[in-house]
Every structure is written in structure tokens, then in C-alpha cells.
Image (tube, rainbow, N blue to C red; front, top):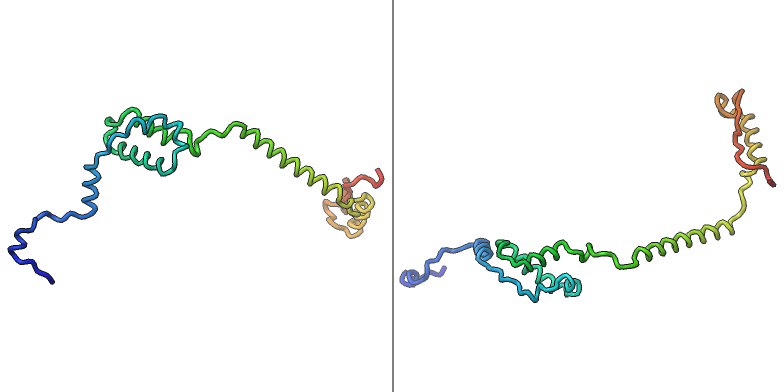
Length: 174
């Protein structure tokens, strides 16, 4: 290990060592954020959307640094700009473009119309009703269920049953 001679050690400054975190905290406390110039903040409401993201971030960071100090030191224009950037109608809070509601309505109607055309085409080219949907077939099903004595207490095979049973279709040909 290298040892410093006593004479040389006495000549070295005897400042206490400071941790990096303590140095950063001291730097943060002593850092003074300078006021942001008026031309930078002028008309920020109209310029914000057109500004490049890097410039937006720099301006917001500068305002954030200014707001970390006493708010009484902020200029009125800085307060207004900070409020507008934080809560103004830009980005996700922006107003929808004019005519967007009409455009959405038209696309929905186009979708409903297209689904109606598809439904109509499927119904037009579909086969007819299955044979089990004729009144004669359903009456024959009733007779078969009575022969088999299906549901003898409350159903079709019971003594005093009054009802259509399996019949749900109109007679064929009407």
C-alpha cells in the first residue's frame, strides 16, 4: 500500500469526505432556476402542439425547476404556462376535430348497411325450412310422444292435457 510521508500529509487539504447523495442534495438545494424568458412562454397555447417533443420536454423541465422553488418568485406568465401545460386542452384532452361525430355516424351506418346486405344475401341463398318444421311432422311427433307415454303427469301424455304439444308451425301451403 502506498503511504504518504507525514510532511506531505500535512500539506494536503483536510476537507471532510461527502457522499455522492449528500453532494447531490446540496447541489439541488443551492441550484437556482432562472426565470424563463417571456418570448419563450409567449403564446404557448398556440405553439405547444407544433413544438418538437424535445423542446416541449425542455420547457416543462425548466418550468418544473422554477416551480420547485418558492411560487411567489414565479412570474404570472410562468404560472399560466405551467397550468396550461399541465391541464390545457392538448394531447389526450384535446377537443375532437370538427365533423368527427358525423364521420363516426356514417361509418356505423355503413357497417349496419353492410351487415344488412350480408344477412339478406344469406337468407336469399339459403335452403328452405327443414322438414321437421311442417305442421304435419309436428302432429306426428305429438302422436309418437302419446304412444310412448312421455311425461305422463303434466305433459302431452297426461289425461287432461290441453295445449299445442310439439306443434308450432302453420299448416303447409298457407
